[in-house]
Image (tube, rainbow, N blue to C red; front, side, top):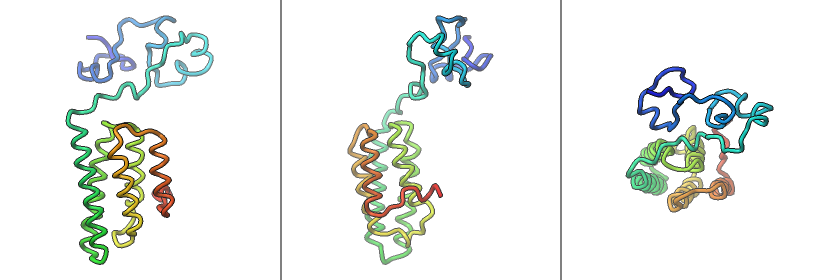
Length: 188
């Protein structure tokens, strides 16, 4: 069985298949870009400049597994569940218990979306993470209707985009910041 790079020993076929990288007597200058290093030596500095052959070095995004079948449907259902919970929280603005239950459902749905981030682009996970952070420390009664409306609008927008870009992410963050949502509050 071939050795997994960096392990110095054997590994399971499943790990080899997921990572897509195996070691088969790789040595010398001609294999420099086939090797993955956990240090800086092989990827930066004089060593890389001197021996690089111009081939693209493997990045972690290339090692992501394929999306699990049915993930798009699961993600869309979770978006809908979250948006419905936001609407219930808005409808129950005067009922503390009803609003709290809806906000808990929003948080649960966001957690499910966060778990699905491996099946979407990085911007998806970033936006979901920021929304989770905005709602994380807030008590249900302190979350304003204006904030819930903008979060709902952001979720509707990103749920309709099949491949989010950096521009889509900036638009979502700007939309929230424009109505006073402190998108960096959870970092403090």
